Structures are given as structure tokens and as C-alpha cells.
Length: 112
Image 1 (cartoon, rainbow, N blue to C red):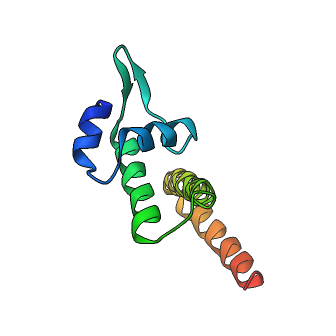
Image 2: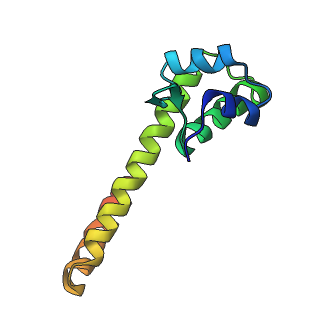
């Protein structure tokens, strides 16, 4: 699903076209470029919703928004990497998985 700017503004009544374009310029939202203008996908829509919640519901100022977005991006990236590691571990023989589990327990205990 790809939405035009006009369609996005119909979804978010509290966002103006000027605000949306400003968020894109600031890099908070990164739509793809279509022939007639920007096209917003599901990730963009989720980020717009998040920016609205941060600014309107939580009163987060504009200086803090990119910091929060960057931290969330890191979190999602790390979750993806952990999922990949878990998939790789699942493909290993039981003996190797158990050894890694023991080593992991030692490391976690050490860092508490």
C-alpha cells in the first residue's frame, strides 16, 4: 500500500500538508518518490502516527523527536538482528545450542 500526501492527510486530521513536508525534510518520515510526488508506505504511516503521538499526546518538543525516532530505529534493527541470531541458533545441533546457552547465561549473570 502506497499513499499520496493527500491520502495521508485524510488519515491524519491533525497534520497539515506543511507539517508533513517539514517532517519529510527533517528526515523523520522517508517516503519513496513517485512520479506525482512522495508515496508513503506502512512504515511511513506508522512513523507519522508516532510523531503525532509524541508531539500531540506526549508534548515532546521538536528537538527530542529525532532522538526518539533514532533510538526506536536502533531498537527495531537490534530486534531484527536478534531474530536472525535466534534463527541461526535454531539450525544448530542440540549440543552447540546448549553450549551457547550456558555461555550466554554466564555472560548475563556477569553483567547484572
